Image 1 (spheres, one colour):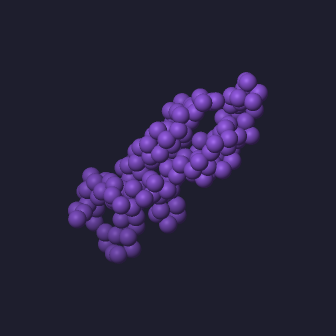
Image 2 (cartoon, one colour):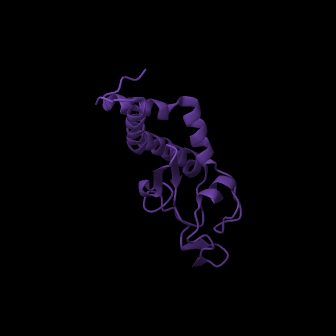
Image 3 (cartoon, rainbow, N blue to C red):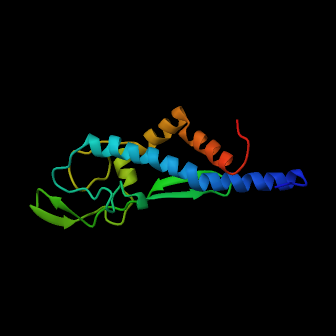
Length: 156
């Protein structure tokens, strides 16, 4: 593509950056987040009184990892998993309605506050750990470079 002026060049660059964000960068961030869900959430605690939904509608379900691009070209990846409708209560010795139903569970898992399924809750900050991992290892930057190169740009 030949750009006739800086305005056209800027427009073309933002277009290609958004393509990269929406594809390879988003996929990379989702992969890093999935690793932290496994390591920081699932491997840190084995539930006694409820069963996890895992990759079937739960925190590890790829369909629950939502990526959007803001108007300023910033990528947002969030886990949109909602609380389960019921959970097994040791006190009731059966399944009871969940107070976390239809509520995003990421803030609860991150903080350890607000669980209705058991008494011993503790923070498992997988989102913060994902952020720190990306900041330290620059996986997203490498994904951006790969995508821009695939689109024909020379990137150093």
